[in-house]
View 1 (cartoon, one colour):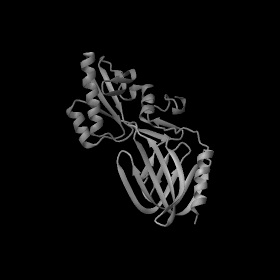
View 2: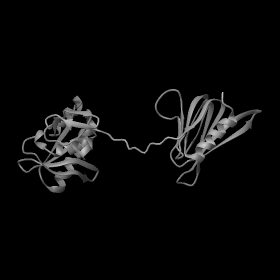
View 3: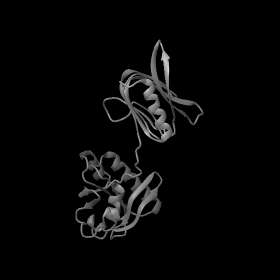
View 4: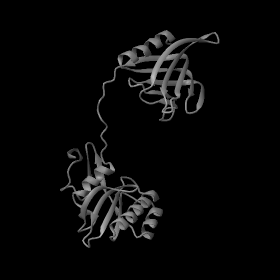
Length: 257
């Protein structure tokens, strides 16, 4: 067991030295701000990061049960309550309205308390994102249809952004919507909206092609009813690259973008 005074020193040291503090113990959690909540006693993990991020985790699930984002002002104090000692770790932050948002973690016992200096400035690199797949397709749209010529990538419309705007051999505009996973009804609705807006704005016949690895049966029916088309995208992702099958000899590695 860790004493409350030792745990307070850990938190204070972490806050002053720009470290991350981890505390594990039995605690209750109170929140006041946009609403109010109270979490009764349980064994939990508290993470206090050097930028003020404040996270209370339970033993299951991925998301924190209570949290404050970066910029919170954190403090720790040993207090007496109902004749018993406890450690109270508090995160405070002002809301845009000027009101105060506050989380209080009341530890009744502690199993672990330690501070760590974490040096990590690396940015997460995602391979095979929809943007990167669009980049690869722009190199040769003939994979989708012979004679298809790219006009513009990420063309803005009133309610979104077209992934690829192209022109076919008959000089018709072609809106291409790229999805990296199975496309559903929302993807078809999005594509139909873009096609309708662009055809009216440009006063030109406009087609729509949904490019994805798979499409749900209902989405495929909706595509067919709307006169839209589907192209099956076959791609592989590895670290640090992604490849669209059929373009291996022409496409660049994603690390080149």
